[in-house]
Length: 240
Image (cartoon, rainbow, N blue to C red; front, side):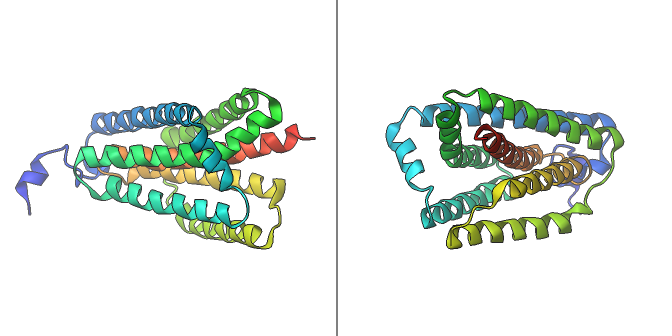
């Protein structure tokens, strides 16, 4: 047994279940501070990207047909590397680089949707409304886990199957040219809500004391997925 590791409560190989309630609370606070930082970074990067016409035009050029499939593939590729840096490295600089890379990838893939929202309504009011609903739902779901302490690990298999089916439908929609529609967006909101419950439960019950960056990335990914489809729903109703 490595006595150096076992004597240092700040090392990432110490489960939260083995530390005091105060240390757990400190970990949770760090996680949400980093989550807030990721959201702020996303907003700042998004604002900067929209100031560069070439980037906006390039992102918009990837929204049709197989180009969107390539864009999704690129997003998943970058996400894979970002998660690897955050989850597998003990170097905090590398972890922050992974989180920053993921924020950039999210900001880039959101360009077409936000552009569509501004084109449909003439301003960002609809984005603000979707953001409020997203944050309210995220807060409520997080509170369920934090207050009850319930372990939602049992959702893992259902979420895995759900995301695989969703990806299959997205690819089929692109290949065969059909619109997945409003019901799909509602289904993805449910899936994102389940992911938030699962990720928050992992944060409370499964992570180690040094993994607050990884925990924040998991929550951020679920939050952005929820925001994407809630905004899609708002846009669907704005066109009626």
